[in-house]
Length: 453
Image (cartoon, rainbow, N blue to C red; front, side):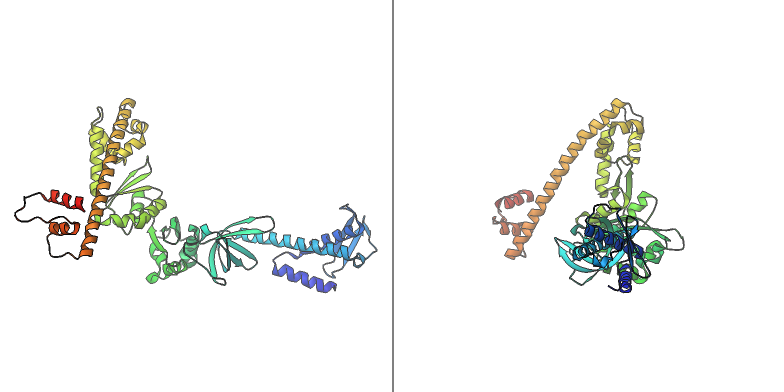
């Protein structure tokens, strides 16, 4: 090959594969040394040396420091094949090292690639010079890409896997949304607005807590954008995943209230010993606070770092009253001590059983024996309360099943215009009561009806 043509090819490879030209020159020199050793059948690695003139493209080969009179063109076919194999292998190694170095610096960045194919559930994405793969665990549930689709994703990890570089991509990681906010919201990229905490269930819902270091900038408003333009771009990228932007507050009580929105919170009681927040909401806000399949309260707990327990006012009051009655029933415990326990967030017998006697000794300055007695008494009461709650739950479920059965059969028979008891009797096959029949209570008649159903 013409030396100048070889240098032009060398420059092209260096430019296209992002490899330093000097590295490629060194690879060619080592490949020529390998060819010479193959031709002369020597194992001495120091016997030959080679230098490639970067201007003319000519090789100068020496043996034991003396110029080799035989030109490389006369080495023969086997030596030439050795030169070719060594050169290709070294070029590949250089390219792998270049890719590893480049993408290692880009970890945590958002990149745009082209979907290629699925392999065992993992999506293979072309990233110009390299291929990345997105494991099923890092994909958004229900999201599918066809070959040729553009894919926006986060570089999650880059590692050397021997003969190749493994680039792990993600669309399900919380940092993916954080980076999308940096792209769509300039104030986040400029650090005027800080993302304080995030909690995400990919494909369903995300809660993100933001705060502004500039009092003139509204963190939530800036993230939402004019008429929701900024948040809409992010939601569209995530195929409709819901995003709740929460205003950050250093007060855990206020933060928990914000995190549970759109539900309205009446009261938040924090127990630092257990890391638990007892939140009181009205009956009509209970399902909203808990969310579909518990998603809202679960994400709020992860966002705030507190174990969040949602109660209605009735449940909260009943729990506190039970705790007061149980604790004050132990000799040596005063009402003021019970008040302090409630102020510390221990609002049920379950909480006192869980914190243990040592906490009571430290906080209430109780005698260890009395503290142990309090915990033991609360443990017994907690077991009773748990059993009662289970019975109430089962009774509620039975009642719901019975009501559903009556409603279903009413629809099937089309019974209308009768009294509730007569309709139920007709539905379930029991004789309806006549004016001359003995006067029985409603409960007894209902029991007879359900018993014959």
